[in-house]
Amino acid sequence: MRAPSPPSDASFTTRLRSAAVAARVGLVLGICFGIAFVTGLISHYAQNVDQPVPFPTSPSWGYRVTQGLHVVTGTACVPLLLVKLWTVYPKLFQRPPGDVRRLTLEVLERASIGVLVASAIFQLASGLANVTEWYPWDFSFRPTHYALAWVAIGSLLVHVAVKLPIIRGALGSDVDATTYDRPSATRPAALSRRGLLRATWVATGVAVLAVAGNTVPFLRRASVLAPHSGGGPQDLPVTKSAFAAGVTSSATSAAYRLEVVHGDRSVSLSREQLLGMDQQTEKLPIACVEGWSASGTWTGVRLRTLLDLVDAPAGSDVVVTSLQERGAFRHSTLPGNFAADHRTTLALALNGEPLAIDHGYPARIIAPNRPGVLQTKWVTRLEVLT
Image (cartoon, rainbow, N blue to C red; front, side):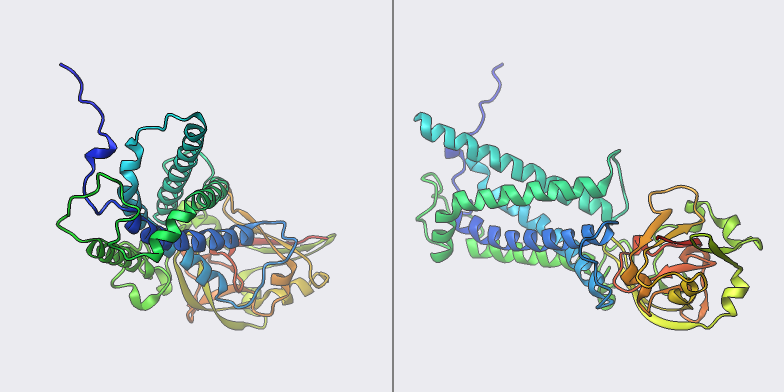
């Protein structure tokens, strides 16, 4: 029995698969990809230890907005990319040109499209997995996602440059124009092109609404796919619990001490001694790389007050160490501008109650405009870098 032959370009006869639709969907997809790319660069830079230009501490909600946009626009790309691929799918089966020069250009163009599609699918799939905190892979997510972002945006720019005359012509014409249609695309479909576009915009809007509640509190009830609804101890979500970090015993031990170190000077403070110092209260958001964020009212000791105990120079970076014994974020480096900001606090309480253990009891760092993964919990040591 002979295997069925692959379809040809002529097998796809519906007028919906057109450059007019692809260009319009591609325009919105490109904008969303661009926003996700830029906000992803911001997030990556905010987590770098070496920052030639210090990441700003103001506005305190800046990272919350950029990371929220990153996840929302990345999610919006999913239905847009699916529709875009559906409209251009017949191109895959077009017969290659016989002319060597045209064939070479065709092969190069298809190769660039292959790279674009593969990198785009990887970015969206891995990004959505990260939002749900599901990591079915062995590689490190952050550097891989960052590297492939450059591949995706580079291949996108190449694709736009190659197709620019068609894109410009299709966008400048009516959506029902047939100028750039394939010769075989003559059969009317049950859905008009405008109807397909409307359905695409609605699907994109639903996808955005399904996750936007991670960042926008009043949308949480409608965001059915938001992994963090805003619930949790003291009305804030928890990404990593004390049990998962293995600190339930050490965090609640009477032997707990905070060590503040600068060179040969050091101070050891119990939680009771920290509570006996001057306390400040700051309302600051905490925003996670997974896209969720929430505001909290944090009370504790101003970080600069603790650094003054060991005569730390102004503007010094500080290495913050957690009680957790393992993990990539057991240590974090607090840049000098964050350490000097009057809002940066070693928090002992949240929303008027002693800090819950899953939020970092006995003490955690909270700083303005800083990724949540670097707002170290269960702090046991502050070491000033000289």
